[in-house]
Length: 265
Image (cartoon, rainbow, N blue to C red; front, top):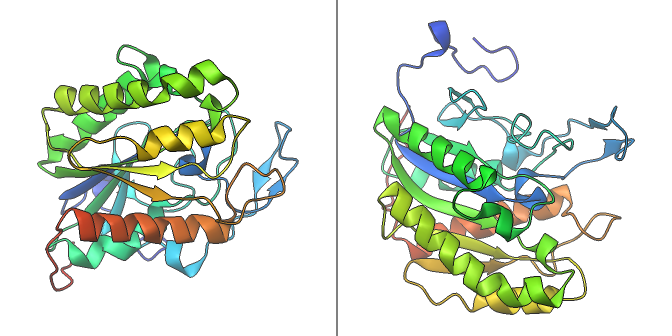
């Protein structure tokens, strides 16, 4: 029994049940999670304050795919071993998972963290390390016979500094959607984008591109107006929780997840 969460831990890292409903979390820092206070945020000894709001608490039916490709009980920070160049805090993933877990028709929920802070969309092109790692992790998550229900994508701040990058964003994003659907063999995979809430001088150009993706099974939620931290770039803990609920609402209303009674893992 895990002392922190009261979640049963099976022998040899295996669980009696494996995730049936899988969600990919990808993009950059606001998906990886920067919610919470940080000690020395720009130094190597930075630490997250460890404060987890009620909406982001662990649950016995929610798992995450670790950097070593093993399912384990999910807890904040979800990206601690994925986005390793910076310290991670609260993101939208756990509040999303807790909001949808009782509406999926029973079975466990699996989160596949893939986001890395400070990354531009060109770094997520097919053949690039970030894309190939996301693809590898997504395919690995399917080996336990689950189903990928959606890709949650929050990225774009790194593409707001130049007119060229902002202008190219729509085409790059459409190509990413095509590539990931093709490479996973899921031509109708739901994609839920987050329209960015911060960035450089071409932020509105990138937001316009995000809202302008006119592909089937692609929708967008707007993070603009959610509270930002002192750096005017990253969402606060409160904002990350709210965003998780916005993503959950988009998934449940746009992609027809069947309502059901809560079912144990």
